Amino acid sequence: MNIPQELKDLIASGSHAHLVTMNKDGSPHVTIVWIGIENGEIVSAHLPRNQKVRNIERDPRVIISLEATTKSSFGLTEYAVIHGEARITEGGAAELLQKLAYVYMGPGVKFPPMENPPPGYITRVRVTRIEGVGPWTGKSV
Image (cartoon, rainbow, N blue to C red; front, side, top):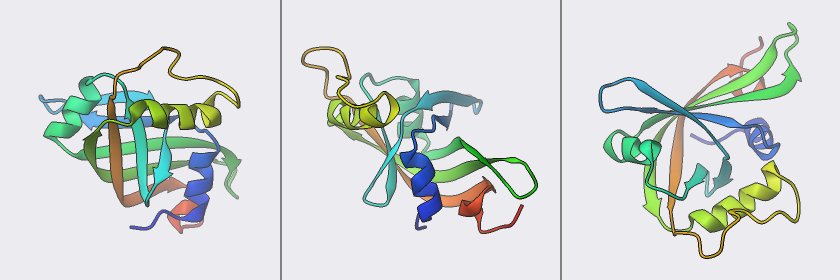
């Protein structure tokens, strides 16, 4: 599924993303991540092989939610809920985190704030469905 320009704009605005993965016991695991778009996929970076990385390696189903600063014609706060299939690639996390830090923290920042960070992992999400309230849904609410 192509990501609508309005959703690309919301992602580029630096809205924090809530990433939901599935724990081994079927319960949801929720974290806040920085996201961007590369080659038509939503990407996020992680230095350690943490719970969300292990969850995606086992079960690729993910949901990402974002809250906008805009209101719908009914006065509702707009938001996006993105369903997708994720995969983990190794390496490149520090470079992606630096790129995203400019969006989320501002120009001139160094992130991660360490010398020789580990290669880490990148989550790449292929969007399968978009819901929520906003122009990215194609519905008027």
